[in-house]
Image (cartoon, rainbow over all chains, first blue to last red; front, top):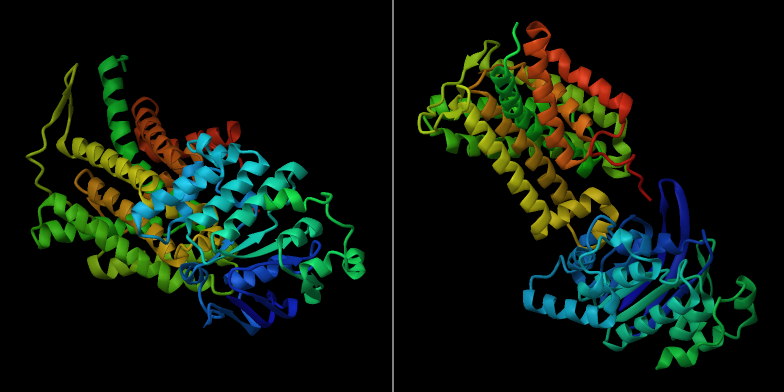
Length: 245
Length: 303
């Protein structure tokens, strides 16, 4: 679904990504792990088109999207779920969700999808007329995820869905990512919460200083001492059972 | 001068009418500021060009006044969009978009202002042209106490309020309006929603210039049309936008009305020959006591 080949990118003269190769298969859940300042967000921006590539190319669904504008990539079905703080605080919950469906013209389907999002996150229905700036951290995370679903994506890229959330809320968010994946949406999760992300995903990449250090099947990475060395581990204990129900 | 309640009321009514016009120009300036993060110093010239377009349509092409108003708005919107695409957008190519282009954009706005005044001078000359519009079908409004409000003032008030209502509806209840608000708040996230951000920027600019043109065509029949009329309007509208809170759309209207009323009262009770000072006096007072403006929010912080 998504193929990243030897991507170099950065800001101005500052190169941050130095040759990234990644592959996200159709229908799979892949995670990209790394600490602060390792190039995770830069990679997401490069794939979304917010910053230009210096070298390399990005293929989505067999199409070379390297030189496409960000909004054109969204129209192809490659949708980024922004960090929670990037909801529009001065818009209502429902306006935020409708903004997610901006690219779509199928009105009846949009209404049906809005209903689906409200079923998945009942708290959003309760708060739909509220300004999203008044929501709690977990609620805003649900909002940006719902906004992503409203775009009817082929693939969702989630930018640190567990950031700054309580462990219990993180669990709920990850269970919902799993539910979204089951509807046939391909998923790339960018995370710092190594353990949770590796339980959720089938395959993982670990980025450091703008290059992929380690990659492999999630169940192998989870017990790999080299991975443990790169991080101090996730904040939640063994939660695999909770995720699968 | 004896205090006369009726004349006070009259000054306030005239102040409000002229104030809503300041308000719609200020609305344009605020719209560009919140959408593009720039202060558009050539906006007075968009108002001036709008007035001239209206004048040409009415007097040389004999177009009825209401249609000339709409025509001038569309022409000026297209003209403004061209100026933005050809000149301003270029400054953002270095990267970072409008937010970073900052100072260069301000200088470019000043330069554009002077250029446009001179272009207008070449086309229409320096003399003030009277704008004779047939407004006989608009009723004169009579208020208690023998206050008569002329047709052009009545028309101005009605059209300004209608324009504000239309803009409010557009921004609040339409899908494109939602996209405009998204672009105004954060362009990167707007991109990630699949919004064609460069197109929306053109739209915002066109809307703002169209509003300026409407003000020009409305003021035309009250005063006259002249190539340097934009300068003072820019200053007044700017004062209105700051008084109301820069970037706030309801603030722009409130600020416009306050500037209009303040100016008329000052001219009536203090000194008529210093009419243009009062707007700035109000501006200074507001800046001293509430620097963010009456309806403004504290400085815009972007992540």
